[in-house]
Image 1 (spheres, one colour):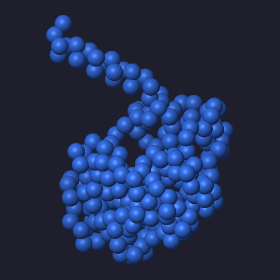
Image 2 (cartoon, helix red, strand yellow):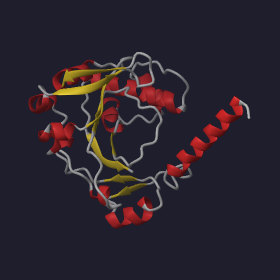
Image 3 (tube, helix red, strand yellow):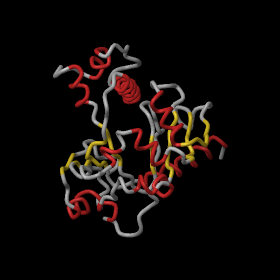
Image 4 (cartoon, helix red, strand yellow):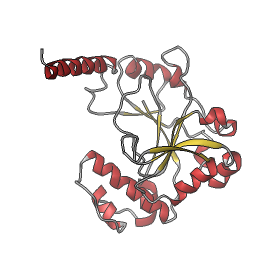
Length: 244
């Protein structure tokens, strides 16, 4: 057997192992449904056991973080002097990517100054809530995390500016993603103008970059739009949606 054939066989085996480790319907589910206030029993039987993705809304409204974390002075007051590890660069696959230790105040200052920089600063997969107990009090662990039994995985934080990208990957455990909604502040600024993403970007004075309806280019332009709206003084808050 040639070395090329051996490499192909090895790659095929690795691919099969990855596919076996993925949830049953993670690759076949083309539409991710949104369920408001989904019961724990419904989540367990309809999604968790089958490995199907779902967006759960109306379940984070009671989080103090939704209001407190909009105030950077609050974050600086409770965590500003603490040292945290951050990643600098578009993502860990870039040649200029590096890691640094800075204070949380310095990290927040970089986020405020960030304008979709080529080298954004990102706090990723860090046990921030173990380090800073005051921030832990601002969030609640959803009951869905206990649906499968067993122990809860480490409670880590991902905290970054617009333009932050994580390369495609598969985690061995489940995560919950909290998202922000661009529509509300956009309508506050431009009114009820119906248009697509490319037209929205152009209305803000930006020039569209890349190809429309291309996932990565859409994500990059959305991040540029977010940075532009923040620069105009609009404030954003975490929505009450969780993604499984």
